[in-house]
Length: 107
Image (cartoon, rainbow, N blue to C red; front, side, top):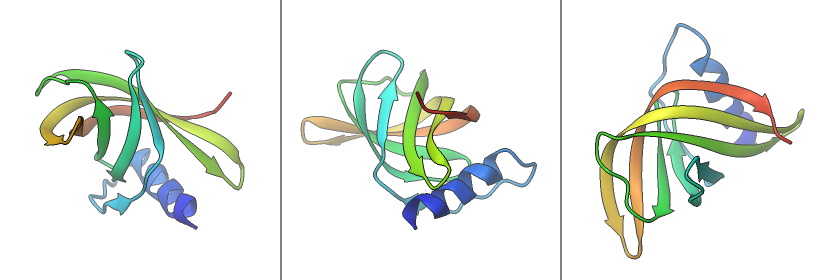
């Protein structure tokens, strides 16, 4: 059920109507630089992830979020701008405003 709600949010992303409804969900996320972590929440306009290492405020990041759905495994491939960085123990929470995103079949 969780992935169905998320899939609806991701479908909204590709339409002209944006939604700021956040869905609390932990999904595996990977930055292009190889760092891995988890999403904390996601909406049509952004995502909050928890990762190891430092990410600079206002930097742009490329990342993937993997999800299992009833139609098979998919991945959200996205680019975003880091709009907030919050320490969380040894990890960092980063809030990313989505600039581009697309759904693709996962390998």
